[in-house]
Amino acid sequence: MFRDRKPGNRWSLPGGHYNPLVADGVRWRDYELAADSALPGGVDDFTGEDWFDLPDRPPRLAECRPYGLPGGLAHPDPQVEQDLIRAVPSGSRFPDPRGTWIRLINGEGPADDPFRAGNAVDCALAVLSTWHGEPAAAAPRLPEYDRVGRPLLTGEDGGIARMERWVGQRFECAGQGRHAYPPIARRLVEAGHGAAAVLVVRWPGGGAHAWNAVNMSGEVIWVDAQRGHMAVEPPYTTVTGVFCVVVDRQGLPR
Image 1 (cartoon, rainbow, N blue to C red):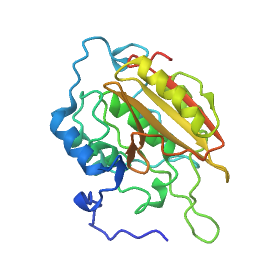
Image 2 (image 1 turned 135 degrees about the horizontal axis):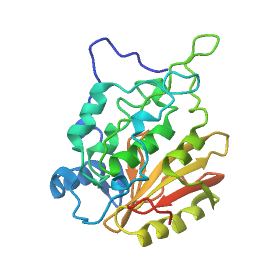
Image 3 (image 1 turned 90 degrees about the vertical axis):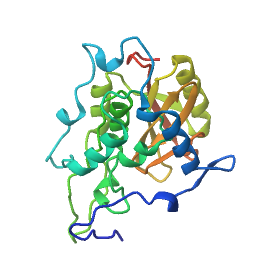
Image 4 (image 1 turned 30 degrees about the vertical axis):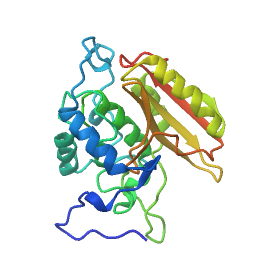
C-alpha cells in the first residue's frame, strides 16, 4: 500500500536516519559526507570537450520525453528539480555519485509516489544528463489505473528505444547474471574517468529494470537512481539477462 501525501507536505531527505551499510563496514552517509567535502560543487578538471559540448550531443532530456501520452510520463515537480540543482549546480560535470544527488534524481521516490516505481528508464537518462553537467530530475510515469482504481506500476512504453535514440547507441547483450558485470566494469575503467553505462537487467520472474554505472576517478560506482542507491559492487546478481551501453566522457562507444 502506498502512502498518500498530505497537501502541502513535501518529501525531505531522512538525513542520518537513512544510513545503510554499503560495503566493508562503511555506511552510505560516510560516503556522502566524504564526497560532499572532497568535491564541493563537483567541478571536474578535464580540459577537453565533453559529450554535451559536441554538435551531436543528446537533446535536453525535458525536450524528448513522452509527456502526457498513455504509457508515457508526467512532468517532474519543479521543486524536485530545484533540489537537484542545488545539490549539483549546472555545469558541474562528473559529480561524485556517493554524494546526495543520487537520492534526489527520483524525487520522493517509489515509496511515496507509486508512479515513480515505473520510471527507471527516465531515471537512468537523468543520471547521464546530470553526470554531464545538466541536472535533470526524473519524470514520473503518467498516472494510470486499472479497472478497480489501483495504480499501474508498469514501465514506460517504448523506453528501451527512447534510451537508444537519446544515447545514440544500441544495447548489447553483456551476459547472464553476476558474470556479466566484470567485463562492463573493465570497459568503464579502460574508458577513463567520466565514462558511464546504462544497464538493463531482466528479472527471473519477468520484467526489467534500468540503472547505471559510472567511472569516478578510476573507481566504478553502480547507481540505481530510481531507488536512490549506489554501491561499489553490482547490486543485482540474480538476473536472467544483462544488456548495456557503455560510452566514454565524449559519448563514444566503448
